Image (cartoon, rainbow, N blue to C red; front, side, top):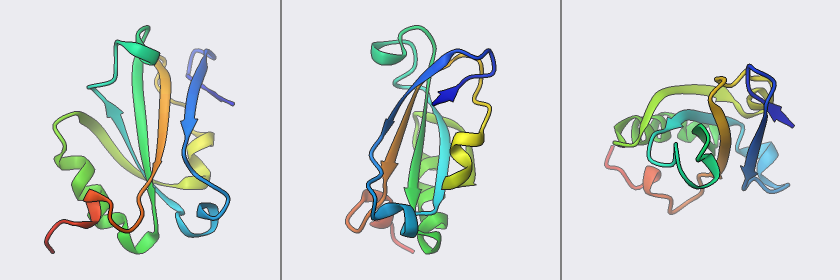
Length: 109
């Protein structure tokens, strides 16, 4: 279970499946400004991570950083995500998987 700095429970929506844990070991973490303040994050902030293969992390980082709805973008090893002390306003955390065909991998080099 993930908790914020204040010890409040954070709802986690994790789309990682068993086969991803060995291959998608990098995570690009960001504050999701669009989802914050309403829906499942109506009482706080929503944070999001895009998990990817190590060889894709630079492209995914650029894609996340260029989005207009993210800020505080950082790179982590996936295994470290659940060791983080997320901000005390975080109440919702989504984890996505970047696979072949994902928009982050469609950027021109």
